Each structure stands twice: as structure tokens, then as C-alpha cells.
Image (cartoon, rainbow, N blue to C red; front, top):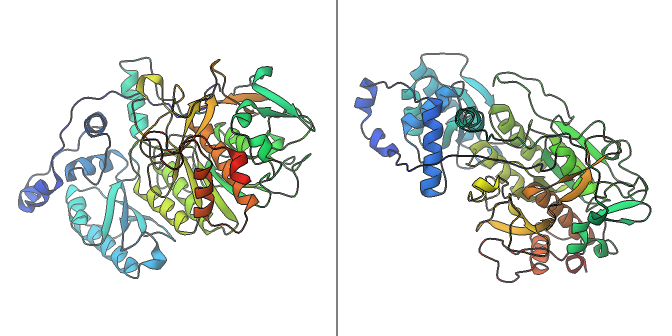
Length: 498
């Protein structure tokens, strides 16, 4: 997997959506006129068109008929956020609003059962089954509803199918099991016999190791899991100069096309992406002749939350939400890293991010990776959220030249050098034991920056999240005035830990 990244290929044209209020102000007419749902092709086209016209897309700003159509085309499952807060414990009206929502659905749908699919334990968020457009309209008019949106509309799956009809290009999931021997110019060997990627020297990471190696800090990784075949991220996680630490693996992904299916699919990576991210952050420093991670003495808690990096469909989005809330509740976690995302907001994931942030977690998310044909796209979700640090990749010896497949934009906070003039990216452990590979895009930039944060926090264990971020900013290229598209730029890690 030469480029383990988030690829998107999209077609756009002009779009003007009808205003939701235009429909809501005439309920009698709606009650008399039941329209057929839009097709998946029509839905995708309108999403694409509005992104090109306005730079973003939001279910909240879309018409009732449009949202209902997407719910209908997505197994008729809707996600609802409600209450005065995303946090169920901080919203005393949450339970009463949930009961009211369920009663409204039962009344308009004419059903007593099979309405509530799931109710989140920590968030004011539920998933429900609705069939009628009038149900959606009634719910959107209720007080206390923060959002209602499709919970299983598979935008990327549909887009791949539609593009495949007219183009050889297709959307990639970021998965792969490639093995690639490393070019000797892309690493340096250090004691006891570990390969240090070229990028570490560009950010002064090796010099920073004289002050901090990440000991005592635990990073939470939300991704596709870790390979069961890679012993350096398993039984040999403590090896050589890496000792006294732990790697914990959790699985919260249900591998099914049906939203009502249950039963997690285990912790093992079946994509390859999560293995590489874990490697870049915390692979051990030992005598095996393999690439070492940025924070080679940090602890890892790895969540298999999705099948691949494109968060499409009910179980991937639900898995990521669960991972954020569980990591938020884990008092051992200081840092969360996720190199996955979507091109528009997902309410339940947004709630999960806010929940983890409210618990003091420092969150890093990938700013977006795409093909050079479509790298005009801006920063992706959830990296654009103010609760996250958005990371992008840049070319060697620059802070403002994005990699060939990386995104830039006003929301970017930091950059990481991950692409050489030769085209080489970052050396990493492969999915298979004793094998190596390269990884690129904003994915590896994000994982690397999360590792850098672990070095800073390990050096200053009593610091708050804000103090860690401020030190990273003060040690970066553009401090004190961030660049309009690349944030504070590249971090001088030696400066950050001194």
C-alpha cells in the first residue's frame, strides 16, 4: 500500500436547494401531497453540487424532503441528537425529550414497536426507524432537537457506483497489505538496530528523544485496528529500548450491511491502515531492523472502529462515536488520534468528539487526503471542528507546500513533512511481521503529530491539554501568526520538549 490515504473522486455542478422553512410553513399542503423519495443518484448529485457551490454540505440546512429521501434510501434509519447538551449527564431534560421523540414517531408511523434502534448511554443521541416524510417533518419541528439526519445513507458507496459508470476512477478506502523494501536514503539506523524515518530528522525528533520518549503517556488510536500478524504491535510491543508500556486493543465495529445487526467484529485490522498508524506513533525501538515510532515508549489503546478510512454507513459511524465516548471516559488517555473522516458532518460523531474533548482529551484528526485531481476539496470532517487539531502533510523542507494528495485550509493547525522530492513517503511497519512499507497523506501526518504531542506531554506530565498545544504552537514555523492555509506549520520537536 504505497499511499495509505483517504482518496475521493467527485463530480460537481451548480446547486440551489429549497429552503426547509418553505416546506414547514405549509403543513396542510405537505399532508395532502406525499412525494416519492429522491433516488440515491439525485441525492449524491445534490450533495456534490452544493459542496462545489458553497464549499460545504449540511443535512441541517437541507429540505425536509431531501433529508427524508436520504433516510428512506438508507434503510429508513435516522440519527437524532436532542436535549440542551450533547452530554446526557448534563442535560436533565434529555430523557423526557427522548420519550417525547419516540411517542411522536409511534403516533405518526402508527407503530408501537420496532421504532428505537439504539439509545446512547453517554450522549443525547438515538437511532430510530422512520418511514414517513410526515414523521420527519414533525420531528424537525420539535423543540429540543439538535439534529436529525440519515444514519445509514452510504454516500461513498453510491458515489463509487455512479462514477464507475462513466469513469475508470474510483474511491479508495485507504486499505492495503503491500510490502515494500525501504530505500536506504529514506532512513538512518540507530541503536540498537532501529530504522529512523527521514522525516524524524526534519522535525528534530531524534534529538528530542534525549529529553522524552513518550513514557507515561497513553494515546488512543481510532482506526481499523492492528494486524494480528505484526508482533511489534503485539507480543513484542515491549522490546529493546521500549519497555514498561502497554498496548490495548478494542473492537467496536459491527461488520454488517444491516443497521440492526449486533456483535462486534473483533480487534484485528482487516484493512492495513490502522496497523501503519499505530506503527508511526509508537512502534518499538529495538534490534529488529524495523522502523521506530515517534513516541516509542508511549502506551497505545487501539480501537477497531471502522472497516476502512471512509466513514460510510451505520456501523462505521456508530463505531467511531462509541470509540470517542469510551476513550473520553478512559482516564488514562491523554491523546486521541484519528486519520479517518467524511466530507460532511455526522451528528453522532460530532457529539462523540465533543464528549471526548469535554473530558480533557487532546484530539488530532486528518485534514484530508485525496487524488491530485480533486485536491481542491478543503479540510474534511471532523478535522474542521474547533475541538480537534487538524493536521495535513507537506513536502520535504517546506511548511506551505502540501503533499500531492493532501488538503489545506483555514482549519489546519499543524503540518508534518511526509513527502520527499523523490516521491518517497514515511517508512513504517507492514501488516506482516518482519516486513516494511511506506505510508503517506494526511493520515501519517496526523499519527506522527499525535506522537509528537505524547513526547511533549511526557516531558511535562502535569500540564493541561492547552499547555501542550501552546508549546507545540510556540515551537512551530509560523508562530505567533498562523498561516492562512497551514496553521502553525511544522513543529520543531526538540524546541517543544526543551
